Image (cartoon, rainbow, N blue to C red; front, side):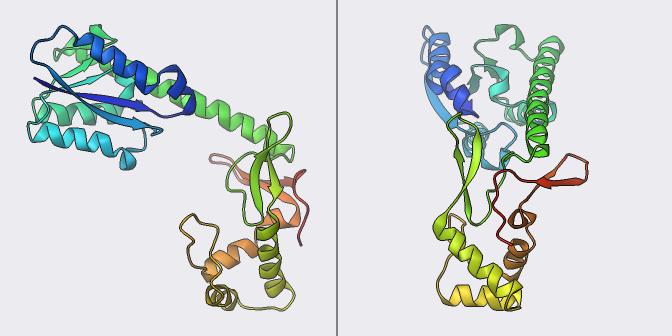
Length: 258
């Protein structure tokens, strides 16, 4: 029998508390006495359960189940597969389609294909989804309060700034001198000399100046327009609530450029 052991951690905290090593040990211990058992590991550290697009190891595991290379899927706990009821159901449906059993080695009461075990897995997935939603709500509430007081509440720092931490460990933005010069060039070209957005982008591309993207992308008129209308450079911080209107308050971490 070949067991596909799926291991996932989505945050640095989980890497320490429920890290790959601990999950691997639990799975190995569960099958320690099994005869003729080979375990193949599929590891995804730092991947959110919701980020199905980038869960390449999960897709590889399901593909190996479809070809018959994996006979059984093992996880430490059910929420390593999904923290969403519908995603959990989809994964289980894919496994059922290939007749591949699913075993949660640390939750033996949920293993099985009868209605009761399926219900228990759905309940666990529902609680995991609830816990995830409440965590997002608490983080959002904290960010909203901080932003309403003019503080940096996360998100893209924007051209001219970079994220850092103060002596108390709080997230702050500090000026990036080199990027700030580029920012001033763009704002001066637009607001003082009246240059068109497309003309500014074309000039920057001709000079071989990359954007702040990791892949060093090209400049576009839309990018220049976004920079020129960013309230941050007028000393305002903007925070968009979920289903709420944007709020703008005087930022306590921005020295106005305009």
